[in-house]
View (cartoon, rainbow over the protein chains, first blue to last red):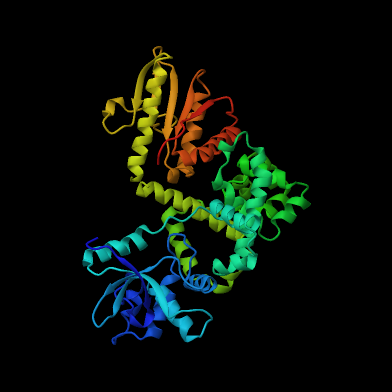
Length: 336
Length: 136
């Protein structure tokens, strides 16, 4: 950097949001006049809910987290302009949230925001900051580590769950599932391993899926235990991990259950799948793919809702299988 | 480090490991898929797949089949098919082993994956060695 930044608490009235910020530029380009604060807020809300490499942070959850914490921990980055004002280099969303809280008279002090001010910053360094913040980005913790930390907060530090939920920006159900999944994995899976070096945190998502409605019940009703489930995870009878959702259907079906116990869920599901229409076996792959794309394009919304409601259902599971197969093939084609 | 550089480093680790083994065994020839190795010294196809490292003894018997996998590639269908193909081949040759090189954080995943393939294909007798503490 050409100069060291200085840390200050800056009045939010002195801040101009950066309309050139890549996150919102695409939304603001539709206005011919300079955007109003309300238009900026809409753009930030829309831009922040984009899928960002698996990140689940949304505008709304960031807002709730800032509200619960009464502020922010990471300072925003500013560049002085004229008349004692500053341009936001990084932190548009946080500034917008502070302003909306002040406008809505949310309890707390939203007049000043912690900032790092770069007095003499070259445009290329501004781009470097944006690249580091949004293209490289902070490294997300893996789901097992998140769950372990949540458990530490709740059960070692004894923070009330309402407080943890608020700090995480809501999502109580998700947090409870994470912590319960962590307990199940530690209680049933870890003791099965020969040594701690065999512990595979990647298997954690199976225990997350285990928390979904009906999975535990169907395991118990079929005469199995949580220890059996952990053994299936360890020996990869449950493979791929998203097939946990299909366990109720597999365990109800005698042949599928036998195949599941002998091989794995992937093979068991084939016994539950709709048989291929005989006339499709002679059709070219290109034609099948085109037909699939066209069919998905016009899938009625009630059907999408039905799939969402029953992710363990045969159609949803077939879609997930098709996705896995396509991703595998596409990765091979692109050499990744 | 890019995916392909990680892979190359993993293959190099396989070769280094095999060289150390040479001192105590009868390795005659080592083939590898390193960039600097000429085409004639690349590993042969095994049941339709080309491993990253292949060692044979003086009498031409296979000793090691080595495969390097990045974290991203490890769980793919192609990887599973590849590992199954090598296990089927090694099951026919006593005193041989599959050697897997994956980044350190993927070793437990690789272990459970290979064990599951062995269980499903009835090839539990094939010995498998996992290199430890590799970067990536």
